[in-house]
Length: 353
Image (cartoon, rainbow, N blue to C red):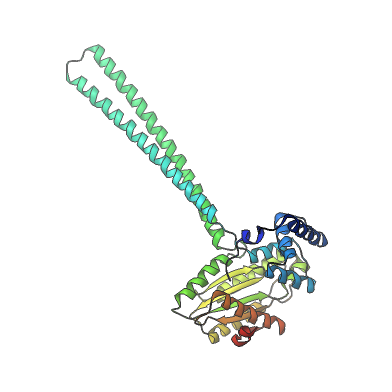
């Protein structure tokens, strides 16, 4: 499963009349679901109308079939699930800012060195003048010169100190912005788990390494749209954070947990065989099912939250696409067989499909 840059899906070389027809279909889709034609909403609607992005088509068709609400939150989660937001340019811009400040600081230091050298030369010259037999007028002139040189040097030092303080503050701001950009490039803002892009990088490294086995758990909250539709998205967000917390606590330190998109999570367990991964998945399923959640505002108990989990173990020769498809097939079987279940990947069935 390769990263999906947004530009690859949006800017095909298509005839204007075809693009116009697709645009009209997208607008009709948005109107049918009472959605504003915002850039994000229109992007998903446009791609759905082309039929080119099968993940978007499948997600929307399934939601319509199951009579789930197609709203802005749904499209936002679908966008996050289907596309990788590239923050590399933002990070590069922050790095360029550091470079510019370093150049400016080096210039200021050079200027300060020049001013200090000139002050030292002025002192040396006037010391020589004092070595002879200076008259009263000479002493007045030397004193005046030294005062002027000292005032100029003091001003230079003050100016340098102000510039250094300004630079220090800018460095602090840039450091915060760079850290934020790096966090956003790696982590999901709602749950604090690593995001899809970081997960793919991690799994690619494991597949390339091949030194140890690992397993993948694909987890999906059952009937999550029903929670959003009944209790609102703030409650839905709280459920996502709680499930994420359970996964984080249950997965060993050597593993990782990611928010894969929407209500889907991925846990990667390095060193685990299929049997060990199945045991871990079952423990996670039971822990989530045992949660007792209430609405904070009304203290109203929420219905039981459950998850379905598909488990796949990486084998020699597996690509990342192979592994994720196996886990997805197992998750689909868990959903089809009643939800709140753990199912393992059947390789023969996946290879035949």
